[in-house]
Image: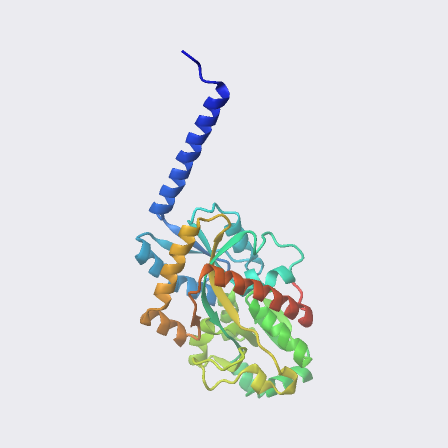
Length: 336
């Protein structure tokens, strides 16, 4: 009886292990999800990122028969939450509600990021894009005699540094929208960064901050309640949710020609996540965003539903890197 060479035994064992491993991976992909899936929101509760994540989570829970929960991890302009997801296992159980900040602005703004927005993530789908809204505390606007953007510019120029500009954090799209406005109008406002739009809005309503360039969905309720005064939207066109509010460009005169600073939000997974899982999530998100109930809810808040493919979302992110690097350079914005 001939003995089988040891090298052949090792090779056969390795092949068997590989086949078993491949089978286990395939089975895991087929059965995913078998437990709760976490959507990390890299900002505090109450902001647009949080609102959109909480709109999508229950739809995914219904579609997959497992809980999709929102986990708020605020800090460093979204970098804390983004790093958590980048370092998570690529098994489909930890997702990120990324933003124009975490995946469009921060690479140009921060000297060192704890994650690579391209290499460390797999884009799933754009959830929504929204304009920002330039708004003031309504009482402060009346006190200062500010009715529109032109009034604001005149007041800010004659009172340099006296107006406080709130933001959801240094380097966020909300901060950058304000910095771009300052650089184009030659005005100076004192920047006050918060850990998310929610806490910043509380201080805005309380009168502890004067102006903010917030994502429209998170401010809509306070604008409708009359506690915040919307001066303009930062998109290139007016928002259907606030049709009577002009754009910054049309309201601001020659100095603001070409001004545009919108925001977007999308789901991403850690690099290495199964394409099958990514595709399944994208399809269900797109399906839910196309339903009348979800679509109408988002449009009423000023958000434009997304749902594009992973490839299209990846291309979108690449374009945003180029655009915001130019904005950061032109505005002279710096992380506080």
